[in-house]
Image (tube, rainbow, N blue to C red; front, side, top):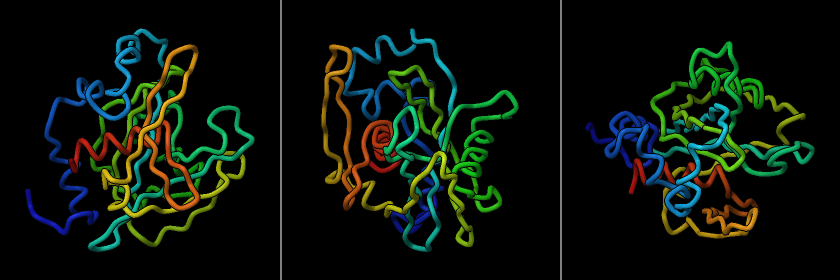
Length: 211
């Protein structure tokens, strides 16, 4: 693999395209908060699943890169106020998870796909609510202008990739859901608390590309 400055978008692209480990369709069980919750892993594929996709947008800033994250509006029925990647359900007209993730990013934050280069995927992320999420890795060129959909997104911000890929910033938490203790990752960043699905996917990104 060609050597690029660590945590640059070029290095990220190379790592995304040259992942080492189990094939994607098998790897999900061993990564992120799935690895912390063996009981959930055992029953995840028995759930009635709905397909979804999220975009992991890594901005190219030369030798350093950052990831775009959103804060969901507090009026949403599910996951209101939480930190999230742009994304949502895969619609019948979407040709692929990549197409769905790009569409959702345009609809939610106005990120034009002309600035986005999909470069790979991470292992599937299964949610307790029955979603089967495909995380789409991408590199984003500067020059874009964002326009937030106020019905879905309250804010959008960038977090340096080196911060998110530093294991020292990965905390663990747990809470009891439906009588079962559920373990998860947390990545506090300033006044924001990145946790749940987003932190689980970021932890998988770390384990898959940088650990």
